[in-house]
Amino acid sequence: MVVLEQRPYQLKHTAVCIGKFDGLHAGHRLLIDSIKTYREKLKMLFTFSFPESEYIYSREEKRYLAERLGIDAYIDCPFDDEFCRMAPEIFLEQVLRKECGAEAVSVGEDFRFGYRRGGDVRFLQNRCALDGFELNVFPKLEMEGSVVSSTRIRTLIREGDIQTANRLLCQPYFIYGTVCHGNRIGSTKLNMPTANQIPDAGKILPPFGVYASRIRIRGGVYAGVTNIGIKPTIPGGNTVGAETHIVGFDGDLYGVDICVELCAFLRKEQRFSSLGLLRDQMEKDKDMACGMLENLK
Image (cartoon, rainbow, N blue to C red; front, side, top):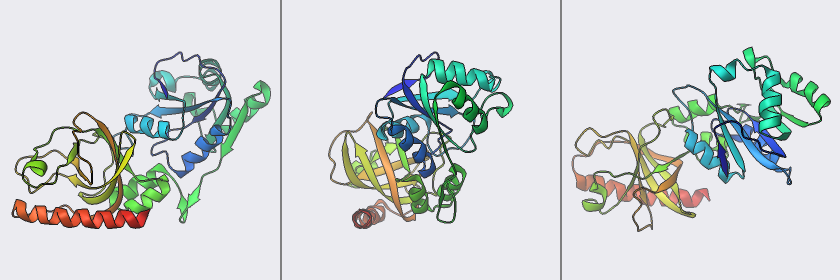
């Protein structure tokens, strides 16, 4: 996948879906699926970076998932002062048509763009008739009683309803990033080595606890059990992180990017009075996680 962050892009013959795309959820998948029908065109996802404090997926996580979904070119446009002052006509002609080479565009029905949000679907429809590019407009998608939205999914994750969030996301919520060094207690004292990740600072995390997880490593998929939190049994001021035991994997993952998908909640994070009790509970967690993952297939 080609990642483009600096203009001009100067691409040709593209089908473009445009939106914020936090989570790349079921509603967003409608737009992505629509551009994939243009088999002879480059499939482009055009998204925006907002100065927000909380989000489902980081910029790197969105890129990773977009590539998995078959996107050919990915643009992350800063929603800065320059962009906010851009007239809708300039965005359409200079950015979409000239720089991105858009011949087909897919948006949601509430899409707005340009200075003071002056461009909307009606504006695009009028320009479509004049300029001859194809426009696909999608209404809000409803699932399980209400509209699918990133706001709704963020609330579900924050409240710990990970399985409902996963259904709206069309896949398990995940943490993607580099395995870093921990305190090595899992491998040296618990006989249960773990892969440690530090999630992006603005990423929404579920309640601290233990989760059945699936881990994607270099094309392989493994069962696992993941602790989200601060490891209260381990002495010291531990950073909030994701610590994952990967069942059946034996190898060095330091410096490797892995994807940890949280599939089901097992229990709250808790402090144990000894490492022995923690080890016993981790074995139970592993057995429970493997059983739950088998049932989720």
